[in-house]
Length: 82
Image 1 (cartoon, rainbow, N blue to C red):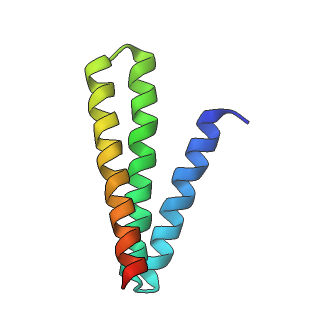
Image 2 (cartoon, rainbow, N blue to C red; image 1 turned 60 degrees about the vertical axis):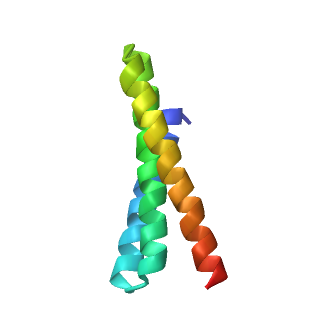
């Protein structure tokens, strides 16, 4: 399977999971799944920009992806602690 398809399926799955948790009113897990979705979309944009030769934009998206990944880990730790 192509990496683009795998990344697209992962993004779609995280969007569906976040919508499920929003409907169930479990907002902590909804926020966690949305942060994971943002991390995955920014990773996909990083690869896309790098292939297009847009180095500065690629670095920016990489830093945004790392920010959302850190937020995801922080949210997961918060959920596990409380």
